[in-house]
Image (cartoon, rainbow, N blue to C red; front, top):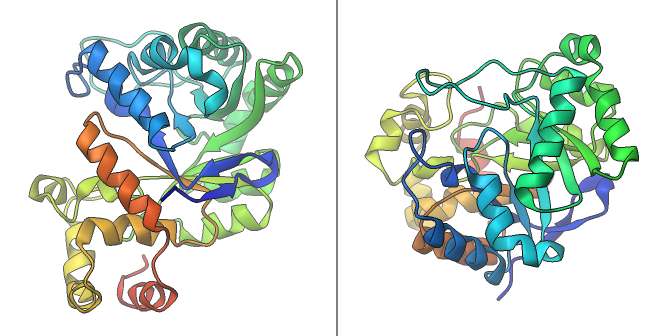
Length: 307
C-alpha cells in the first residue's frame, strides 16, 4: 500500500496526506533527547515510508540542522516547509512561547538561516509563525518581504500558521498559498475555516491531527491535548458516546482520530511528529488506510461536539 496524495492547493504540489512534523527532533530542554544518528535513521524512514512533506521551523531547536545533515542529499524527494518570524536565538533560562519578530530584517534572517541549516537553495513553503494579526503583518511589511524572497528564488510559496481569532482575517487577505491550522476530532474549533481556506484555493496543513495521542495516553488527556483549557478534550470524547461507535465499527481510538482528521474534505495533509520509529511506522500504516468510510465519518461528526 501507499499513502494517498492530494494537491496542496494553488501550489500545485502533490503531497502525501500524512506529513512529518520535525518539532520532536528539537532536542533538550524542550523536547525528548534524541541522538543525531537516531534522528538520521528516523528522517530517512520518513522518506522510505512514502511521506513526501516535512515541516520544521527555526523554533524547533536542532531539527533544521538534522534535516539538512541527513536528508540534504535527498532534497528532491520531499516538499520542505519551514517558518519565519521566529527569534534567531532562544533564551536558555525561560520557557516558550517566546516573542516573535515579523520585521523585514528578522524574516529575511530566518529564511537565510533556514537555508543554511537545511543545506538547500530553496524552501518550498515559508509560513508566518504564531498567527500574528493582520495589523502586525501590515505594520512590518511581512508579506512584502516574503514576496521579495520569493522573487529571489529563496522560497516558492508563502503560508500562514494561523489560529483563531486572526485566521479568518488571514484567509480574507488572499495572499497565502497555504495555511497550517490545528484540528482533530477533539478540537474542531477551526473546522469551517479549513473548508473556507480550501475553497479559496489554498493548501491546508493540519497540525495536531493525531491529537498528540490523547485518546490512548492518560498523561496527554490530563494536558487537555490541543485544547485551550485542561480537560476539555477528555470531556468532549467521553460525553460524545464515540466509544460505542468505535466498538461497533471495530476501529481503535488512535486509528480513528488520525483517520477522522484525514477525512476532512478540505485537508491537503496532516503533520504528525514523533521521534520514535515504531510510532512513525504505525502512523504510516494508518494513513495508508486513508479517510474513514463516509457513513462512519458523518456519524462521528454528529456525536463529537463543535465549540
